[in-house]
Amino acid sequence: MSVLDVRAVVKSYGPKRAVDGVSVRVEKGEVFGLLGPNGAGKTSLIRMIMDITRPDSGEILLFDAPIRPETKHRLGYLPEERGLYQKQRVFDILAFLGRLKGLAPHVAAARAEKYLDRVGLLEAKKKRMRELSKGMQQKVQIAAVLLHEPDLLIMDEPFSGLDPVNRMLIIDIMKECTARGTSLVLSTHLMDQVEALCARVFLIHRGREVLSGSVREIKEQFADNAIFLETDRDLRSHASVVNGEGSKVWLRPGTNPEQFMADLISSGAKIRRFERALPSMDEIFVKVVS
Image (cartoon, rainbow, N blue to C red; front, side, top):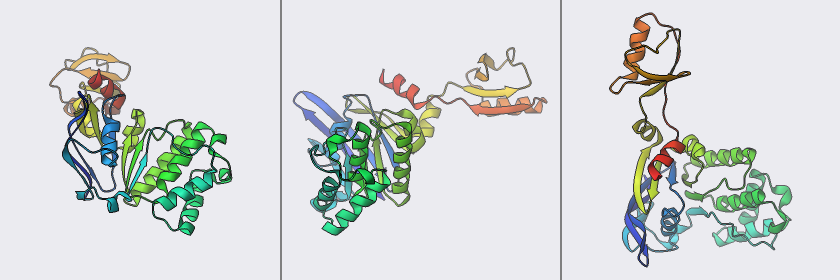
């Protein structure tokens, strides 16, 4: 089932075309990476999905239907900017936001406690937002997004201000959400998190799609025929080897890595390690954008 279907969407602000014919499809229960450099059009696209702004042309479907007020409550949105009331107490803010999402007062209060506890901030519920650190405020915002238990979560830079321990906490929460069928659109510049979490990614640059597909397919597309190989043989003079650096070996164009390994084994070589040397998403991002 398609949870989100963006079809040939265009959005301009004056002479600048922020989103130029973008099409994106997100399936139920998947983690989908929305990537791009600053100013690429990610935020403009997200705001249209959230119905904050409307596209100039194209179509956006939520849960296989046009965006309607009665389906918008099934969305959860974490913006990059912090926007919670700084002078109010943490619990009061969350309970209020829960009621805005249509939860009964007692349910909103129970959910506020539940998700504050889940992000490790239950003891801070009586504190005012301005008394919290940057990372703690980020966790309160994440709790606010989870309150109504949406079917589609859109999170823009969710790891901002978080230390490694709290990043792992939020990743665990994301996995819990997707395990129960929630779809997650993740926009982040942390490519290691993209590799760890996302099944598919979409890279937008200057308003247009420049890359999309599964993480594995994209990494194989940009691979340079290198392998990690540990063996008892000296491969420097091997006919199929161009260069070697430690355990990383570059093969000549057209050489099949698996066949290369099979030939080594048949010749009596002992193989301790064999692995395709795929580029990181960081390397691909830089190559495509620059």
